[in-house]
Length: 203
Image (cartoon, rainbow, N blue to C red; front, side, top):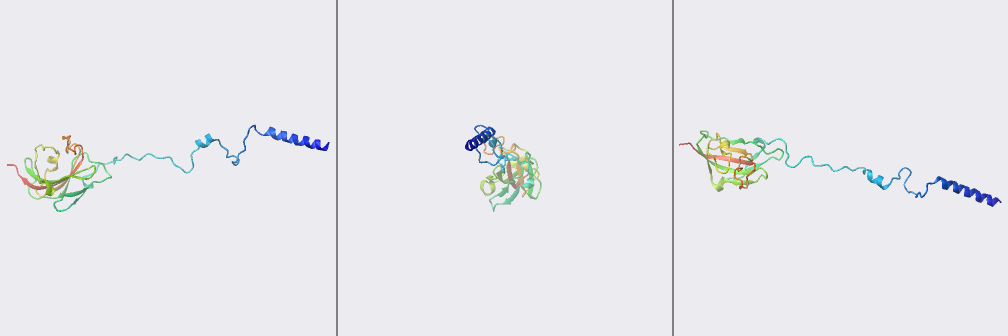
């Protein structure tokens, strides 16, 4: 009878435990309070990581326009023209700019005068010399006040120049070879170093 009482007591305890446990519950190895479903885990961001950020600004968006003083000019060598360094922290100018690199002597050039000019032309986009008359092509003859074939901007760039004047000129894209759509520099902002070799007054 005593054994029967023990069996009844054990069965009662087992039944009570079964009633307290949820059906089909699977055991977990996680500590209490850390049990989350896979969908909940996917929704939680990983700790210690940052979302990728977009670039701060598109390439070439450089704010204010450069001035003529921002451009560095150095002589490349005897008869080789000039080395031009274009700044990278400002935008291409939209108007013609000039800067005296060396003063000349004599009477300033006036309308109708013919100027013989040595020059180097550098493209703004890549900083490379595209044309260089120093020791190569010979001088360019420009008559002030006359429409120049191909390259616009000479009239404004050479106003008031004297013999021996060396001048830095920044020519915006609508004043260089803009009228010659077939020219490789059409639509390009240009940096020109021009040196007046001779001035022939109007007859």
